Image 1 (tube, rainbow, N blue to C red):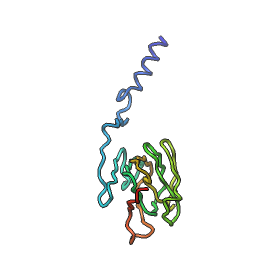
Image 2: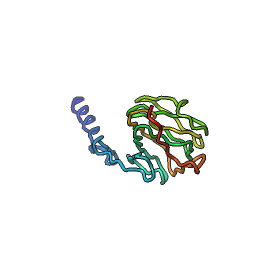
Image 3: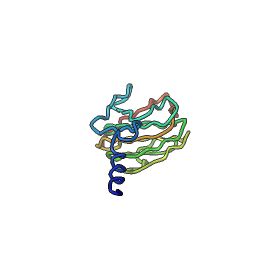
Image 4: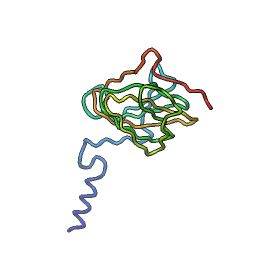
Length: 154
């Protein structure tokens, strides 16, 4: 009898078996969208919506040698590097030479209002996954400079 109960327990964990609220997004089904006004940056909404109340999960894909300038967000964000080496810095002074180089599996917490800048400072495409609570707003430290930088290739 205990084997039968164990089988039912395992069956309950199978996709869609016990809870219709589970959401699965296979890698091949991630839908990338070009971010308007950027030099090739793309994003993918995995769950939720940063402009609405509640938890959201997004992915951002930075092409090689593209970073964003110093900016902040209205709410905390949790960033995990999925692919490539992500370069991240904090504070209002944009200086890619001072950026931390974070590889796949690395994590960075962005506190609400914390000024930071990040992206790809190499020949690699970088993908990060960001988790936070909406609604979220973002603000550039110096809007006159534009939000994105294409770095010189070294």
